[in-house]
Amino acid sequence: MSFKSLLRDTSWADRVLFSALVAVSVAGIFFIRDVMPQGQSITIEVDGKPAYILPLDEDRMLSVEGPVGLTTVEIKDRKVRVTDSPCRNKLCVKQGWVGSGSIICLPNRIVVIIGNKAKKKGPDAITG
Amino acid sequence: MNKEKTLLRVVSALSSVFCILIIVLSLSACSPQKDNIYQKSKVLMDTLVIITVASSSESGAEIATNAAFAEIERLEGLLDFYSPESQISLINRNAGVSGVQVSHDVIELIDKALYVSEKTDGAFDVTIGPLTSLYDFHKHVRPDDKTIRKNLALINYRDLLLDNAGYTVYLKRKGMLIDTGGIAKGYAADRAVETLKKQGIQAGIVAVAGDIRTFGLKPDGKPWKIGIRNPNATNDKDEIFATVQLTDMAISTSGDYERFFFANNKRIHHLLNPKTGYPSEACRSVSVIAKEGVFTDAFATGAFILGPVKGMKVLEGMGFGGIIMDNEGKTRLTPNMRGKVEFQVAPS
Image (cartoon, rainbow over all chains, first blue to last red; front, side, top):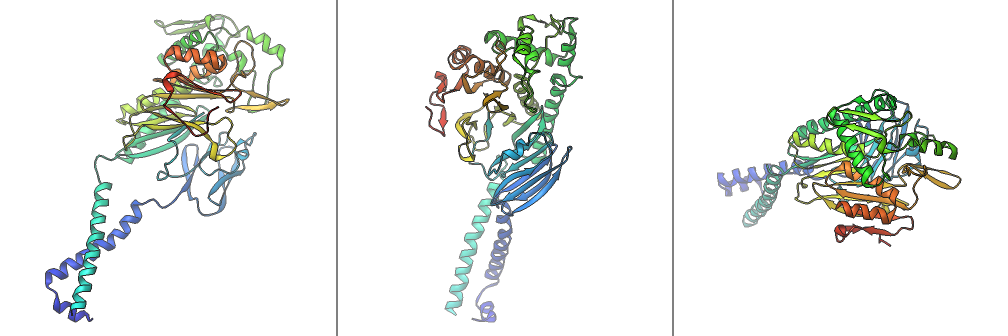
C-alpha cells in the first residue's frame, strides 16, 4: 500500500473523518490517564496542612519536622511505619507497619494517612 | 486496492469505538449531578478530626471543611479542661465561690451533660474532674487508693447548679471540677455538621476521633459505612469487628483500648467509674447510635461504666441503638440494631 494510492482512493470526506477520529483517539489516551486511578499514595500532614504526598509503591525513608522535632517515616513494600519521633510515649512508633488508615503523632502534630480517594472498599469512617 | 480500503475501514471502525468510549467517559466525568468526596484531617481537641464531605467542587468542599474545623477549634477554646483560658477552667476556679456567666454553647453542653448524668444515675458524671485529673495516660501515672477515696467525695453532678436563664454555672463545693472530656467531642461533631450544612454541604461525616456524626447520603446514593474498632485486633486485617450503615445519625464508641497503660499486669484505662475511682472492667467496647453526637458520646461512656446489662437497659430505655462487647468478648445488641450490624469478626 502507498500513501498516494490511499489518498487517491478516498474522498475528502473520508480523509477528514479519518483525521478527526485519530486526533480524538490520541487525545483520549491522555484523558483516560487522568480519570482512572493510578494507585495509592500517602499524605503526611503537619499541623493539619499537607506537607508531603508520596507514592506508596516507592520505598523510602524521610524525616518530617513538626513543632517538637523530627518524626521519621519509612515506606516499604507498600506499608508505612514511624521509626522515630520526639514524643514521650512513642505510640506512633509502637503502632508498627500499617497498610491502610493512619498513624498519628499527636505531640508532634503529624498525621500519616495511607490511601487515596480512589481506594474506598473499607468503611468511610471508624469509631472506637 | 481492496486490501487498502479494508484496512482503512478497520482502522476507522476501531477509532470510532474508542471515540465512543471517550465520549461516554467524558459525559460521566462532566455530569453536573455527580458529587465527589473530599476528606481533610486536622489535630484538634487533642485528637484527630477527619471531615469528609460530598461536593460538586473542591473549592466549595475546602471552604466548608475549614469553617467546620474553625467551629471545632472555637469550642475547644471554651471547653478545654487543661486550658486556663477556657470557660470550663473559669467555672472550676470559682468552685465553692461563685457562679460564672458563660456562653450559650457551654450552658447547652452542661445542660445535656447533667441530663445524661441523671439518666445513667451518675455512671456518667460531668463533675468527674477531681478523679480524671489524678490519672495521666501520657506519663502512665495512676493515683494511690487514699487519694482516690479523698477525691471521690468531690464528685456529684447534683452539686452543679445551672441557671439557664442567667447563663451561669456554679459548683457548690471548693475542689469540684467539671470535665467535659466524655461529651465534648460528640457535641463538637454535631456543631461541625451544622456548620457544614450552613455552607451548603448536603452529605458528609464529621469524625472527632471515634465520635462520628453522619448526614445525607454518599454520591452513589448509599448510607455512610462506619466501622467499629475491634478491641481484640492484632493486625490490620481484623481492625474492624463490625460495620453499620448510617445516614443522619451519630455513633460513638467507648473502649478500654483507646487510652491505657499497664501497671502490675493490669490495664489502667481512661473510662473511670465516678463511684469507685477505678477503671470500669465489665465491658471492652460500647457503641451507641442516636440522632445527636452529644448523646452518643456521653451515653457510650455511661453505658460502659454501668456494664453490659444495666448499660443495655439504659440504651434501650432511651430508644438508642447499642452494641456492647463485654469483658468475655460476648456481644449484645439492642433490639433495634438486630439485622443492622454486619459483623466482620463472628460475635460470640
